[in-house]
Image (tube, rainbow, N blue to C red; front, top):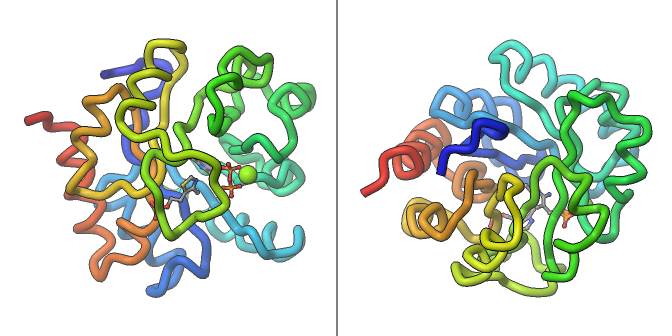
Length: 211
Ligand SMILES: Cc1ncc(COP(=O)(O)OP(=O)(O)O)c(N)n1
Ligand SMILES: Cc1ncsc1CCOP(=O)(O)O
Ligand SMILES: [Mg+2]
């Protein structure tokens, strides 16, 4: 499905720890391979170190005109003037972020429970993440794996852009898109690849060329 409000198809989520080849190298290669949105997700850094890392990454993503999203930390997101912020059920609510966030800045919100779709928080978000689609060792503090049926259900209940995340790779990306996702977000499929550019290219091809 092509959504003019959300043109991004392949969304890379990174942290220094997840990128054995080095985060900046992985991100640059992934952009060259076709990634069109990047999120910095550092779960264990203090705000000062998170900000330092975010500034370095923003310089790189800006040089390719690729939007940068900051996970969880509004202070870091504001200080680097990021394109977006991504939050979940246990983070700062989208309605609170919206009060200080520029209208052009994007808010992503993870959907872990169906009832979230009826909330002001989901209504305020610019896009929703179906989180996680499949079980993944990369994030284990999850409540429910939606599966393909879950994407189909959520697709019928909202017109917001849907990002699918969790356990997605070249082997299942097409069925995830066919179930109704607008965009695929990955960590290990690119960050753990020996050749991140090739991995990104293959994912993007599978996303944009339906078979
Ligand atoms: C694109 C995207 N989707 C989902 C998540 C998960 O967010 P959250 O539920 O807040 O969990 P943490 O990432 O903070 O552990 C995400 N980060 N990005
Ligand atoms: C951050 C996040 N949110 C839901 S699943 C997940 C991890 C996705 O990692 P992978 O692509 O390696 O399964
Ligand atoms: Mg979070």
